[in-house]
Length: 356
Image 1 (tube, rainbow, N blue to C red):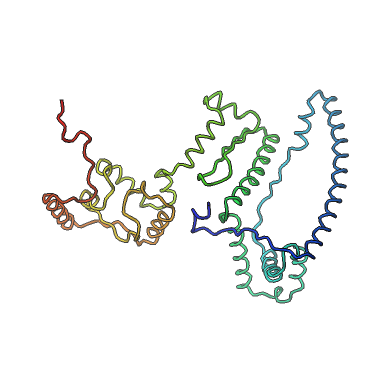
Image 2: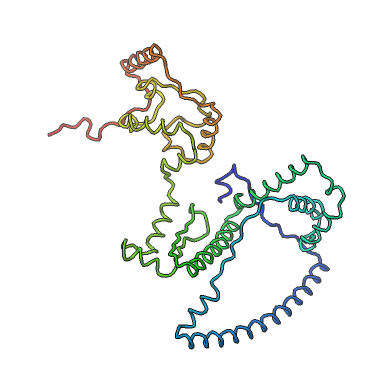
């Protein structure tokens, strides 16, 4: 799952279902029947409204010589976007009060927002807080919001539902924006691992997808299939490694790879760097073999390497001329003794055969 592949991230806990006794089941059955009756009444009223609306839409379309679908699009094209508000002390206090009074209450019987706000207003201890406590509560609220916004889903099912719900809102926003402003927008979405359950999909406003077929000679289905293959491929490029490292040392490492490409083709070894450039390193994390970043396969290893470099625990050290010369003499002596130093170079496929 996405959670197991990101052990360092906070996890959004799944909602647990509680077992109900006979009395609770009876109460919920009565409540469900009441909701059903109410929903049927609402449905009938909405059906009558829609019938009247259809009649009115057809009248407007006929009067202005346009299609009824055009009128419906103009009516339903709206946005639900709201600016995000900063953390407030009132919300922080409501959150603390909810944790105090709702912790032991079963699902369906927890206090609602209005009741919690009244409890906070009637609690004298929460009305006379010092500045340090206020900042503490605000910090906890901010951390909780970040946890909910960026925490990983604990199961593939929860992740799939999150993807579906979020993409639905994005589609509606883009479609409404296209109606209001006339923009063209397209979106390709795929999962990042073969074990993820949400399907790859694409979306476009108006006839934007004709662009890919007319100009690029590629169908949207072909593009999304190729994107899915690329995203689920186990071989990750150096750019992905570089974005996780996020350190200046990546530049020097990349330059060193370019300068010594012929030598690094047979293996990125410590002995080669010391012999060729006179550069050593200190503080490489234990348990991670020193190798090319291309060969670092897990995100945990990349993060460990990033952390030690940020903390200046890992550093590149320039050897003195005498140290470099002494090391080269030792390596040359070992090679003369037919000892393998570093990663051996792969032999030619036609070794031992006579050439024409």
